[in-house]
Amino acid sequence: MFSARRYLLLGFFTVVLVVLVNLAWWEYYGRTEKLLDTQLSRRLSAVAAAAALSVDPDDVTMSGLGDLDAYSKLIRVLARVQESDSLSEVFILAADYSYIATTLTERDSVYFLSQLNATYIDSALFGLNHQPVTTASYRTGPITLKSAFAPLVDSTGLVLAVLGVEADVDYFDALSTLRRNLRVASFFSIAGGLVSGLIFLGIQAKLNRAEQHASMN
Image (cartoon, rainbow, N blue to C red; front, side, top):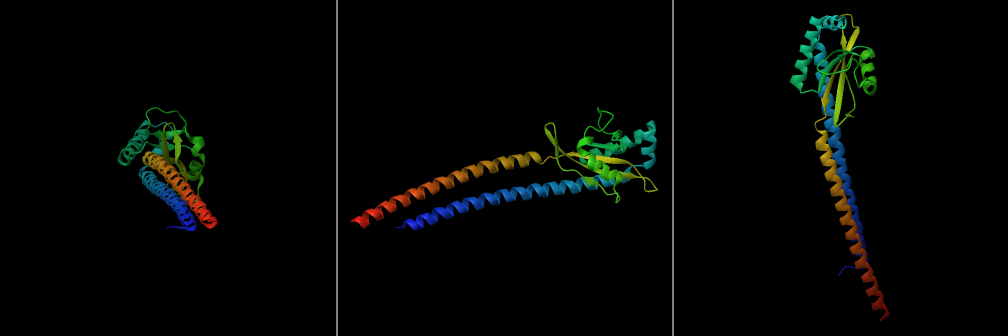
C-alpha cells in the first residue's frame, strides 16, 4: 500500500506531466505557425521578384503618363501573375502610393493599405539592394493577408515604381482551428490534472488520519 509521501510524489509528477504536455502542444503550434509564415513569405518574395522582371520599365513610365496601350500591357502581365499564383491582387504603385496599374476592378486612386504597409513600400522604393520585401500578416475585414513588394528598376538602376503581390493567408483558418482545439485540450488536461491532484491529496489526508489513529492506538 502506498504511503502518504508516495501519493504526494505521484500527484506532483502528474501535475508536472500535464504542464510539460501542454508546453509541448503550444511549442508545436508556434513552430507550425512560424514554418507556414516563413514558407509563404519566401513564396511571395519569389513571385514578386519574378513578376518584376516580367514588367517592361518603359510600359511603367508610359502608363504613368496615361498611355493606354502601355497600361493594357501591364494589366495583362499582372493578371497572368495573379492567375498563375492564385493571388488576391497584383499591382504597381508610384512613389506617392497611387496605383499605376492593378488587377482590382474596383479601386481608389491610392493604394488603400498604404499607411499599413508604407514601411515595406518605402523599403522597396528606396532600398539599396533592390530586393523584394515581405510584410507581416495583417487583417483586413474578415480575411488575413500578406504582401510582398519588389522594386521596378529601369536600365540605369533607377527605381521607377513598386510591384506588389498580395495573397490570402489561407492557412490562417486551419491555425485558428488548431489553436481552438489546443485551448480545449489544455483546459481538459489541466482540469484532469487538478482533479487527480485533489484525489491524491484526499488519499494522502486519509492516510495521514489512519497513521495518526494507528499511532494513538
